[in-house]
Length: 232
Image (cartoon, rainbow, N blue to C red; front, side, top):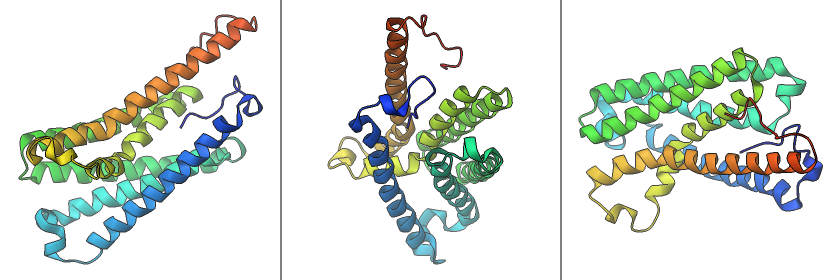
């Protein structure tokens, strides 16, 4: 979800490079809508059978799902619009609501973890996801407070990838044979970890590759070594 910067004009990109983000966002939109509809259908009716082990803790579940769903929906507004340039106040307001929704979701996650009868491995994996979510948001928030816009943008991309981890987790569950690799008490925590670690690793590989290509072009054009103080 890397976006062009002042060092990479949109006109310099190939048609495939320009089309890929649109295709990726379209796929994400379809998968997200499906995920939200499934979640709504499952939990919109107060039924102990549908809630299962969450019935006695449904308030925590509502906080977690509600905050997370709002974050999922608000994220694209920050990336697909030009509001950060044309309407910075709107961009900042949406960002504050996004962070508030994330805090609500994390509070719900904390309540679910504290009351969960699940194995320790599951609770640790769930807690690690929430901590990574909070940590990336904190770095992104402090970066924009220091007016380091590129650093802020990169850390909020990382944060949004973690926001999408429930969708990634569900997608991994659908991989044929994946749950046959190990018993559920083992495989579920592994998939919880992979649902956010794997996207972050892929993202870092892509970003570092883009940075190397940009620096090479700058050196070749005589623009210096291309080192960027905000390349974190």
